[in-house]
Length: 229
Image (tube, rainbow, N blue to C red; front, side, top):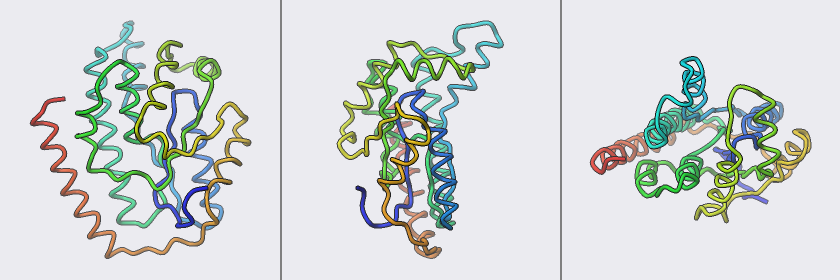
């Protein structure tokens, strides 16, 4: 069970095909149905868009792996910043489809070092709850093939699974069996959340915290640009 304190940020992470997007939508809707100010927030890195562009151009890829990881890191950083800023000012519960750890796992899966990425993302606090959707790579592969708009190699899905489990943050994740049906997964997610009452908005505090976080984020960007990704 997670803390009894109502969470302000809930992140769903895991390999492609684990059901992150589906479950984040369902969870945000379920919390909203309980009268909570929950909102689905996508923190994508642009990989799907670049994949479609490559397909339109008749190429395997538009950017190399290193360049794609850099672009993905920047886009995801901006998406997370936007989500957290909105949360600070509105008091919403942000149900986040992916988080910074997804970038760390992606880098590790491609045999990279995630030290610089961690410098880049260090301004962001850890989510109150991080759900890791654990799925068999073969099941994930089949799901990706069925949806038909992207593709992942089986070797990468296996490497990404191992990468997530190697993260120092992993012991703090709530592991969910994502091999089940969407309804079963959703029930398990809700079972791990505390009984949530109405989350009161504290606008003044949010503004102060938000300003401090934005300043820290600017510092992290400066650090990242100085080192080079």
